[in-house]
Length: 276
Image 1: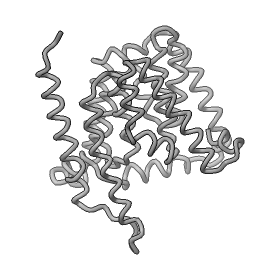
Image 2: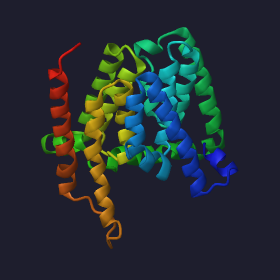
Image 3: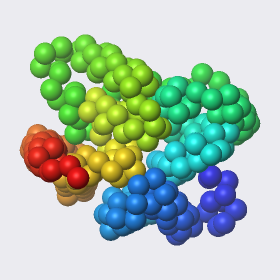
């Protein structure tokens, strides 16, 4: 993906232009999985334009690949396997849906094997770095934190054990999703919600991993709950501080409390709605 950017000129505008294509692919994928209303909701929401286009985050590319894996998994499971593992080569999260009931066909695994080979070939130019390849991942898992729901709630109870506890909770949710979720997008939604709930670092672009599958599964209550969490952009007001950006305790209350309130109210209204 970065090589493609370089070939096209390697500028910020190029990265953002490719992001437009990625974002449109997500829109069409949601329309194929649910209907045009949910695709329109995604298209009108600021999350995609802010993160996939202006921010050019590679999360958008991984999300687009996984969306289209969900679209084709029934008719072309080999292609779904290929797209899923290629998405996992961009960001690791797509790998977590492998093993859900929709991905258990031999054809899917053949496509996944091909995608894995492509991912390994893409690693060849950087393999000479050796163990240093994993250094940043260790730093990220042990030290990084930002506006975390799980870390904020568990640290007073478990202290330094809070992160391992969150890993266990996330792993339990992952296993439950693989056992109980019959479609790829349903497994993705459960895993994405668990990820956002337990991750110590909840950057705004991580919300794509809940917002997109929620719309693909026609679960607008989860999509609505994402919107207040965009308030974490308020930390940018402190970016020019002499000590760098500062995360105020008020940020957590100003984002997570409204998000959880929206989720509870929207879920309650959805369950009270009469079935036809």
